[in-house]
Picture 1: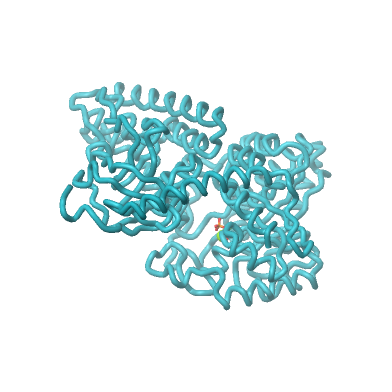
Picture 2: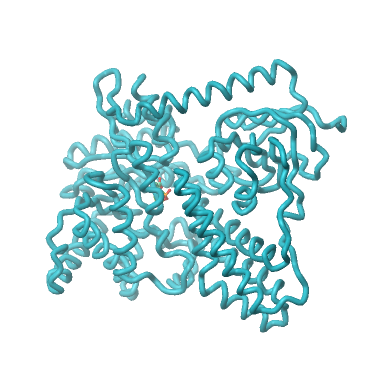
Length: 547
Ligand code: PEP
Ligand code: MG
């Protein structure tokens, strides 16, 4: 053990819980794509196809094991590996003189660069996933495998791509500490799903192998890795671990219990999802419905927009996964600004977060194609709901003024007329209509803005960004990215008051709803419809039941 192999390495909490064990460092070579010189383009494309098949199999196995969120990550990677654009990028790179392996890696970088340019933290993190797909294919091409720890360990690494974590036997992965990563990194999502304590962004963490064998404790809630822990540290870690397991089991028993607070207030817990797999997870944790389906997932990683049929099929799967009468709140595409979806050919903007975002895109005079995209989403949603008997709520993002609401109502009316003209029974199918409140100007004028709508849902992530003038993805502004700051709370109170006057339901689907303290704050303000990541539902339910 080196003399520096003691003390605490601090990072950001990723997945809660505590675990103790010896450090095992993932060799850096695993993160750098292996290159087999002399491979042909055909061999590279075949390796990519094998990677796609492997990822599909892993996704199916994880979903079958009840780990829907994990399955979702791997099925998204399988889609990336099957993307014709990836193959086209390999051909392009080969034209520039690269051999098969080099072309494969270069193509992975091209695909990753497209995703990395997105301002949404979650979507930008998917760039790592596509790079990981390229690495998996490169390993297949080179015929190499990943070194494995062979015993239970605390994994220390720069980063932990899904393809690597998929290879490490679960029983050997006690805890994870990463030098890179963010709260929305795939490693965090996987760790949460598997109940493995994880910290990320531990900038002082040595990842050169010098910590190998050193005993360590990961505290995922505190965001620390304690090296060479004292016996008191170990005892505390053990207690936290045991408590975590007890908490999870106890919370799971409450899944069928309606969320009624001690004062008799009934709170409705919904889930935020991005696919049909997410819907299955929402059902598993006893969410009463989906308060936010981020429909953008259908628009990414492709070269042309999806048509109405494709969207209808995808939405149908979500309704089917939700079963019976759980409502689905389908948010129309929240894209734009510098969230670049190349085929949409959006104009370059100096201040993208203050630019053409969300529903604003549907109203650009000379872009009938964008309006048609929103219309196709509405038509697909109505048809999917009608086909499954689902309870549909349609929601528009980034609304600032009444004129946008009027436009939304007109758009939906026009879509219904078009469906009727086509003889589609879905033309008459009921749907609640609402808007997201993410702009302070909207929050302060709900009474007029939302009159005639059925509901509003506050996106506290963006509302906080705009209220505090603090870019939501700038790590230097963490202190200002506080949805419970007095200025944001004042806006939330205004929303509740305005919604009462307008006679519309009000809910929250921003991250504030996904913590016990945030959920309690919202109920104090008078908001009782809370939508959150499925992983947060159990804890929030219990926290409110006891409040
Ligand atoms: C929000 O802004 O709070 C929200 C839920 O939307 P997104 O995070 O997708 O922008
Ligand atoms: Mg938002």
